[in-house]
Image 1 (cartoon, rainbow over the protein chains, first blue to last red):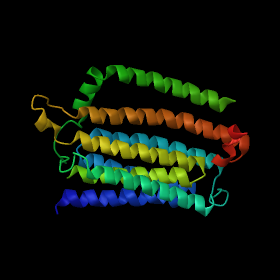
Image 2: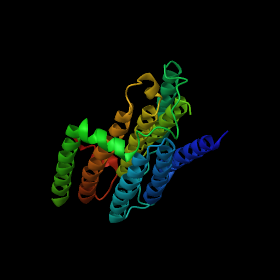
Image 3: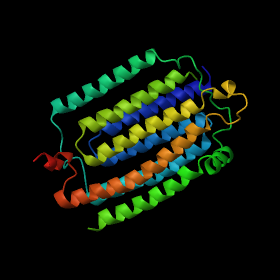
Image 4: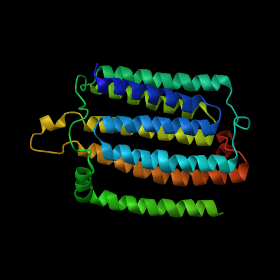
Length: 165
Length: 109
């Protein structure tokens, strides 16, 4: 068992454990903090797969910007564990059973898949570097890139319009 | 690293997100669970982009770069979605003084 496998299992356990804590913790602020830990673990996976650009962007955009926005909204509303309404426990159990059924179906579908035995190459290849990604982004994918700028503008206008009234 | 392990990890993260959406009533937690599901898909896309496609297509140097660009666009769309969605949640809180999604059943009546 070499170092990349140890890192893979450690990061996977960290991601899964903190994702479960996001769902079960009562206080929304704690949920946000656990979600940030999940994003750090996923960024570790990206860096392990030599996708450095996506790892850093994941940290900056998700853990840096989006989660700060969530924390800001939670603090603006002054939510805490006492004021949060809880579903009754049969509905919670039904949700967990439904999610477990989906897990079962997906794992069973994977048993028949053709991808079994293929290797995801860790630590090699340079398609995740900024140079190659930037070249592809500004040649093959330049139209979706420009359209996403329009999407950002409309999202900004929409947020202002919704928040104003 | 075998690709199945990444697929199992992504499936587990996605199902945790589904359970969070189904079992919680706080709109902000539901929104965070949607982000969790998006990240599970992102992780799977990056893992597939590193599957050894370069051996199958010898002429193409950066085979599999599309997966990582899709992840980039998913992040862009997620950022736009969060800004609008949080504005909607703030407006809902202003009207009902709660972020409980069970208050939002007025379309039923």
